[in-house]
Image (tube, rainbow, N blue to C red; front, side, top):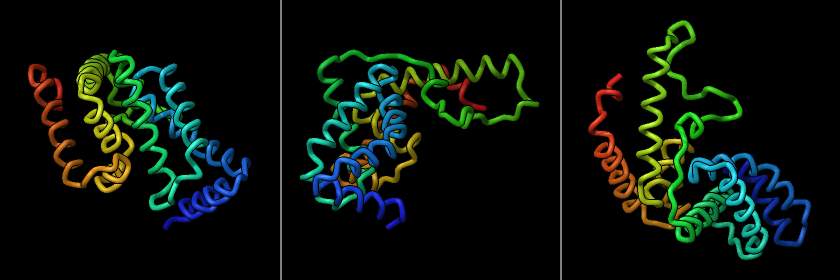
Length: 197
């Protein structure tokens, strides 16, 4: 167990004994990560903020029943995913955003794959179009597949962590993630020449 996970476990234990400050520390530690994850799922800053707030309310309400069989962060991802799926059931409206917003972080251009010296208007236009098409395809995936794509390719969670987060067998995660990738490929097939860089 990492030092961070051990520290989280101690904070969870304190929360379960009624220590409000420990819960506040967990919220401060994970609110930015939770918001980024929610933003990648929803594609909308307001919805992401609402989703994050709802997830932390659920954490507050259910922390006493958290059995500590998994890391707190894994449990939080599960709650966020469940909140997102509940939101999708309520709204059944798919929102659109650019992939630039999807991958933007506080550290800025993490996803850049070329140096500033190679930037050109042509390259920028092609990249923007690829990103727009990719984000549009991701947002048209079924909710579980979208969540898995974001968890694996953006959050960089392992298959095992996704399985734990979604409470699914490992094989189911692998097969659903593979189907999501195949669906993305199929949706993007008409414009595949843009992705052959």
